[in-house]
Length: 180
Image (cartoon, rainbow, N blue to C red; front, side, top):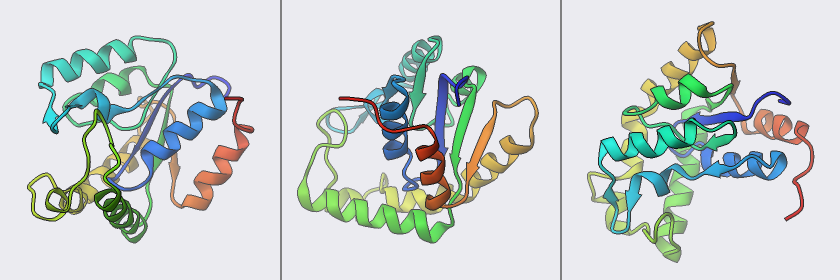
């Protein structure tokens, strides 16, 4: 880990990418960039694709960063510069269970997620943007991508985590969180 200064945390929706990225940042001091803040404006307005690429490209040009996701439209940018991909490859029941609990909690408490946006019951269950639906649509594709990266020598180093316990043990190996 001493050489990893550009880290992509990748996984299926609900796997815990954002929480893990924040915790890695706390332990390493590396700057963490919340991808949802870069890709969605207030009112859940999606940032134009060229602007998303510009924003992500600017971050990836730096020598130190952590991204908590990578969208297919610009995944090439962090992959070209990352020196570590932490891939959360949990069974569906774990990631979907986490996603359901998170969605219910967010819809109930109304806490802002990114740029003032909040989860609503309608968005969770009756919207074409439902994260619950997205999980089912993207699970197999993202999982296959992780496993492909793991076998490619041209990819950045990939740490494929198959359980939350394995992920926690690795995180603890980084040392305690820093002050602050």
